[in-house]
Image (cartoon, rainbow, N blue to C red; front, top):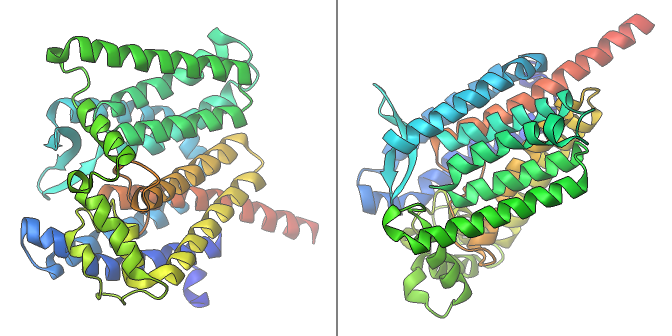
Length: 386
């Protein structure tokens, strides 16, 4: 392993965790797809092969990104932000719709789909990080500092929320934390939150008053999920959650063994949105403990890279990426264990899903580029001293 790691610069612990998770994802995806076979047909090898292609693309994306200099991310952040807006708008009008949600773009010629919000999340974190550094001396001023920093957050989250409330809410929360870390005054953040809350409240009122306008096409879905979560006795209306609970219970301490789970065959999205439930059923509480531990180590190393950087932009992007990965993991676990209403957040680096997997690896590649440049700088300083 040490011989191969010499080609992978940056934080070696992150590389080991990322490679370990990507490799293990091949095993779990093969094991967790029976429900998908029932719905769409095909064989496990079909989905394994497709996921393997994504894993290879994701790894090389991560490797390529980690060889770039972070200064290029600073320069490209604004372009990526506007590109994200374009992709979200295109998806809104021409994207593929599943369950009344238009989230996917079909890539021509290769017949693969891409979720534009996965790209938009990273693009917004990069652009917000750039703005927080550029505007660091103007954050006490609404016109020159606060509004220019908050507007991109409002635009991207506003475009996402129509079809994916959970992603928009999670991304908005991460951006608010980044703004706080970037020393946007707390009073101004509180006023922003109040304004967003009021805007959301009146939007819901208008939607209910004029349902024919279909202002929030997925509002009923959001409401049903919240109601079902608050009324767990209505198990038939939320069978996937009930099966998720049973799968976790069935896993017990040591699990049923890889491939031995039975309830995964009755949990929609067992390979993605309900990944944690399927994982616990087959690997048990001990496996779940090590899974959480790996993610915590990953989060710690990413934060450490950011805090060790001499540049604010690099610190912000590492903290933002760390929070993004951590929040997705947390939501997936909270949904599967019943602490959160059902929503669509999968497990980074493990669950089946092309764009989510690739963008997670791109994000980690960016943090590794920061670590690589920092290590090179330290080595140069040591060589000069000697």
